[in-house]
Amino acid sequence: KDKLNEAETFLKNIAAKNGLILFVGTRPAAKDIVKESATALGMPYVTERWIGGTLTNFKTISKRLEMLSSLEQKGAAGEFEKYTKKERLLFEKDILRLKHHFDGLRLLNRLPAALFVVNIPHDEIAVKEAVIMNIPVVALTDTNANPKMIAHPIPSNDDSTSVIRYMLDRMVRAVEEGKAEALAPKPEIAS
Image (cartoon, rainbow, N blue to C red; front, side, top):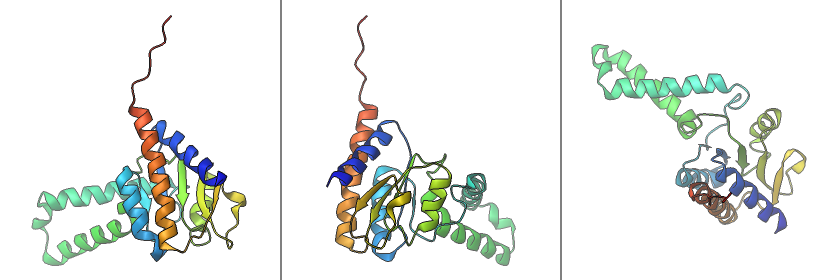
């Protein structure tokens, strides 16, 4: 219970400072819940395979995100009409491929202040990159997980959909409280 409260307080404080929290959950039990939670908060997420270098090679990932936006804008503006049917299909394939890998990262306009990881063994590369970049990690730590690299481990089952939903609901509430604090007017100090 204490570790859960610590993690909530940590994420609340990050949100209060307008920090980004990257939510990671690529196992089937977690995908929908992670996407739903991150989207509700306006935070970036990864629910498909973690792309190596997402944090350690952030500039390249940013270029991929720019490329996706650019292709979508060109498509919406009808700029693909001048190309052959085969070329248009290739553009559409590129957009679908980029969306599959990077759609959840669109809001990642800077390195995140923290990572929330549902399953450490499954998303080990994400955790290692966060450690390399000195980004604190909050994670559910089941008995098969090594909590040594985790700044805020939460002892918990990481396979049960209902447990994942409960934990993410708690994190979402904490982040929402932090965001509300950030928007609240600061009291003026009388001199």
